Length: 125
Image: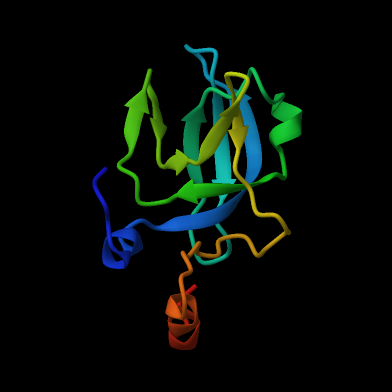
């Protein structure tokens, strides 16, 4: 296993987004999701194969964990601008989401000892 340190982890801009719109991909059996990243950030779109786990209606309003600075990629003519974090259950994708509702767009941190307190004192969000 290759280990990373906290500085490496900080390079990943993980945010809490909220799905505000979903439509079918015109060429694939995937969804195109519009993710609200809060008042300071722009909305982003992502192509994701979630149809086996979620209907389009089930996704609207759901908070998700999202990597904002993942390199965009065009997938069958549609730009996907980030990366949703998921896991699997019985071979089907399951979205990661906060245990409690949090503000849309907030940054996700790691915590070990006093490192989170250091970021909160600096005003990082």
